[in-house]
Amino acid sequence: MKAIAIQRFVHGALNVQAGDEVDAPESTVRELEAAGLVCTDQKAAPSPESKQAPKPANKSKGT
Image 1: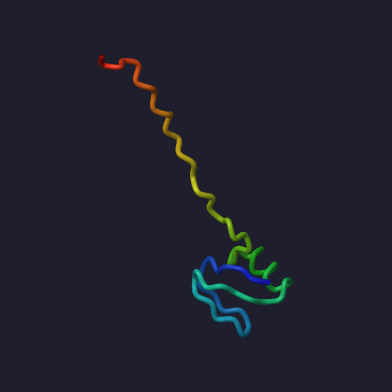
Image 2: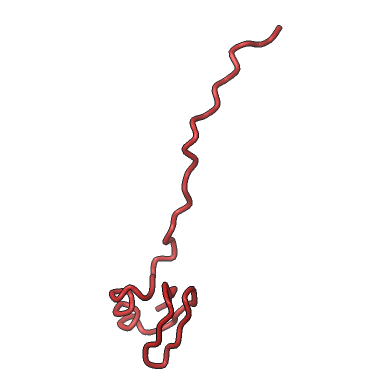
């Protein structure tokens, strides 16, 4: 199972830097996720939508 390291840690044979991809058995990844060391969710931060109101149509034609 693959996960992304949130912070640097050493776990057995794993020596991982923050941001590295970890490929380990599911049980190991679940333990590391419970400890807050890795994140399995690939969409951790969804892109924010624009909150700006739509621009109003110009009412004066200028003719």
